[in-house]
Amino acid sequence: MWALRPARCQRQALARRREPSSNGPALSPPRLPFAAICLPGCSPRHGHCEKPGECQCRLGWQGRLCDECVRYPGCLHGACAQPWQCHCREGWGGLFCSQDLNYCTHHRPCKNGATCTNTGQGSFTCSCRAGFTGTSCEVEANECDSHPCKNGGSCSVNSGACSHASCTCPQGFYGKNCEVSAMTCADGPCFNGGTCEEKHLGRYTCRCPVSYHGSNCEKKIDRCSSNPCLNGKCPSPLGVLPRHKPGRPV
Image (cartoon, rainbow, N blue to C red; front, side, top):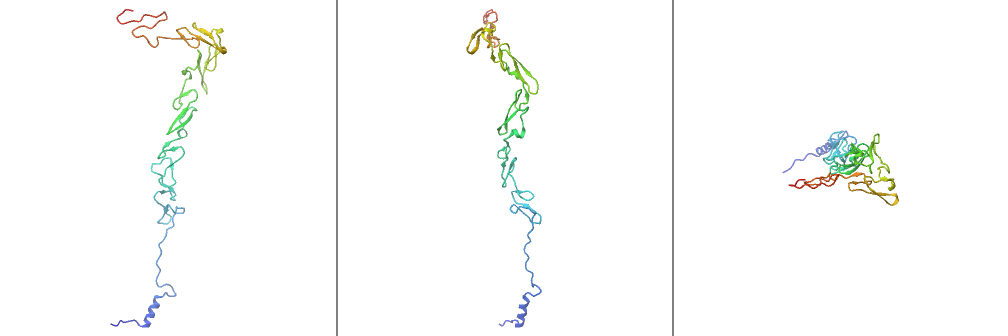
């Protein structure tokens, strides 16, 4: 069969119709996708936008400009350089940075001018000044309760801004706690029938009778204070009384 073909002049007209005219293109070119401009400063790595002026953070990042990492869940006193980290700040420890390693600085538990020392894991100790006691040195103590004065010295507490105990020493003794003797056997330092013996460097010792003791035999021994006798009576100052036995008269 024979196919009908357009005349030569018609083919030339069709070709000219497909060519762009001098007034402009015959067909509009396809448009490129529009790229939104994000919020100025929005992190190009950790943020993006779908509308102009936005800054939507990717997973693990936060903040207005998506430049802050998200810490590990439960992290209390820590920071991060990358998402899901928990690097503890100074003075804190543990998985969640919740263990107080510097309790003294954060809480100041010691009172009345005491010195605080961290012992780790949220613990501490207080070194109390003279005149105070307790875990936090919160209790005012009477220094005389520890009986610091020796050799029969009397104790008293001096009141004031810096109270402290002082000892009033008996004759022949001196020192902060009346611990130094200035007497010799010639001064008769032994009481209650004690016998004095000279020692080197001007010192002496007292040999005390049975019922007394102390460096100068100044203390009487109470042998009955411990209740040593079972079913009997304790020795009296007049002598030893017979032990009472069950079934026999005393």
